Image (tube, rainbow, N blue to C red; front, side):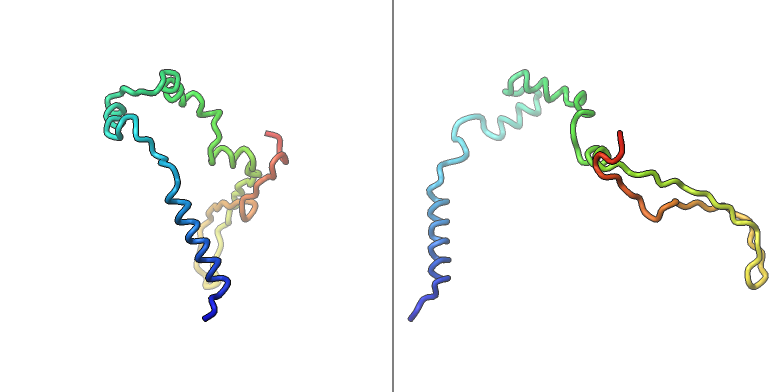
Length: 124
């Protein structure tokens, strides 16, 4: 009975993967507060975090305009090119069957779809 080379390679890979995971050191520390203690201190407003860290977390509102996020990043890098809205007046007229149609206005965009500038193409 001949064993395939790929089967050998797969078996050796799986064995090394399993033994590698079993010999990993303990990642979760055994010391420190329990999850329940951390939750209770958070709900009570007391925290074991340094005062400076808590102060930074409370001042996040002041940094909102300097922070990158998806909405302002897209708008800053790829600004939308102008696409003016045009208004057209349709004069009163008769249909092909002789029925009257009153005059009305309609609006539409000049271009079919919105276009975006490449980064650096338009000055901010």
